[in-house]
Amino acid sequence: MADRALHIGIDGRELVGKPTGVGRYLLSVLRVWAEDRDSPHRFTIFLPSEAPAAVKALGDRFAVNVDPTPRAGTIWEQTKLASAVSAARPDVFFAAGYTAPLRLPCPSVVAVYDVSFFAHPEWFATRERMRRQWTTGAAAKAARRVVTISQFSADEIVRWIKIPPDKIVVAPPAAPEVPSPSTEPRWPIALFVGSLFNRRRIPELLQAFSFVARSIPDAQLLMIGDNRTHPPIDPRALAAELGISERVDWREYVTDAELDAAYRRARVFVFLSDYEGFAMTPLEALAHGVPSVLLDTPVAREVYGDAARLVSTDTAEIAQALISLLRDEKAHAELLERGRRRLAAFSWPTTAATVRRALEEAAAG
Image (cartoon, rainbow, N blue to C red):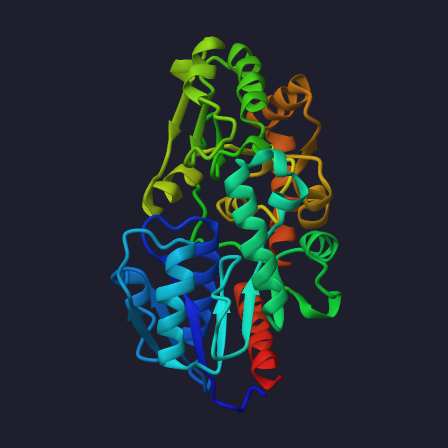
């Protein structure tokens, strides 16, 4: 199958604007494919706006098909994107962000990273939940392969969408390559990176940090991510209520350079999520030399095991874990060493090869 030259269509909408986890996953896979000069395949990336520099840098084998729209949502997907793919007629289509046009001229592979909108509908507004359940369920059932990022998510997809296990391919993400993790002294910063969802325990994080702030006078909490909470949570108002406004910095979005700088300054990473498909940002933190405090969940145990400090939702326990890693050099070094060993289990070339095989198998029938 690998010797057959394929024309692979790709939904690239997550690559434009302000890319988050899905966009970073897709771009990392595309960069590996671009570096493989022996690959016979060519690609068309379908975009709702002009190609960003990162897409243009992929090279000549990556054509770009732009159909402008101010909002690349479900209507664009099912109309303009569907029409553009039908006109281009690729051999197989990769839908990298949960959903795909229902009418395609070719087989499809869809990436579904988690199914929180099925497992925990209470975290979503009714209309948003119903849209996500319907579009993701329909795309996954129509696809010849479903790519996901952990065995936990694979099991959840079987449970909630009723996809046969042999149709699911696990292709976990990896960390970015960091040329040289910082050797400068770390600041007493606890860092959170990711969209703010209710499942990510923002109130508990702020409450725990209020204990940390009383114990470590120069400690700071830096939160990076847009606010998608429902019902709404105002982290600044919560910080003010706890009397820690001066110690908490929340930024809704930063550039890649600013994010890299934040990872290089921070001493500990904290990500208290009840439900994830994988949780990429703790892996990114490890690549930058920052150990993590994570909520003890099945996926955290699968992905990170003893390479992270796993805690309950008890705010005193969370605070103690943060204080330990901010103060205790030995505890910090030991956890970081276990984390570095765990990093070796994840590789973007392996991930990209797994996704490529899924596309080749889907095209073969």
